[in-house]
Image 1 (tube, rainbow, N blue to C red):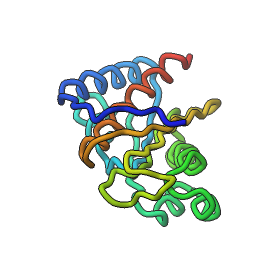
Image 2: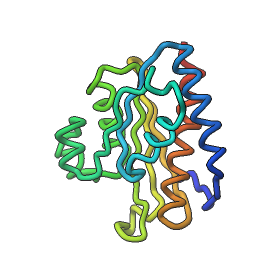
Image 3: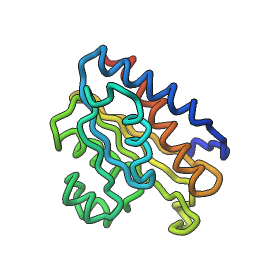
Image 4: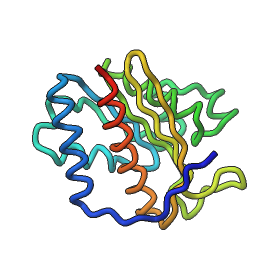
Length: 173
């Protein structure tokens, strides 16, 4: 089941405010974060590192755009990619676990999707995005169908990842 989101416009302040909340909570909790981004191409890393103090918790952002990078850097199995594809629940979970494992961070966020305008298939349309968040004891993944042009899909995915991670952080003790 897709969670459909319209091609919304977000102001830069929207991202700044969300990123500030993440930075504040991560520093307060004294926890660390790693990212594995594919379709967002480092956009989430960009928003987080624009906030002073992010170096206290943000350890690494991996842009694993190619399948080979997902395998070599994050430990995603080639059989998972072959069977389910790079844009799948199975792959995003392995990306999140791998990102957390790379520098042994407390949390990780992973994003993979089809930003378009090409790359879609009948079962995987443009705008399909998977986001996963991971801690030592919890792994959650989400599937979305965003609308709009490429840049809008990337921004929607990055914003949604921040929203999800804030909820995840607030649940974590």
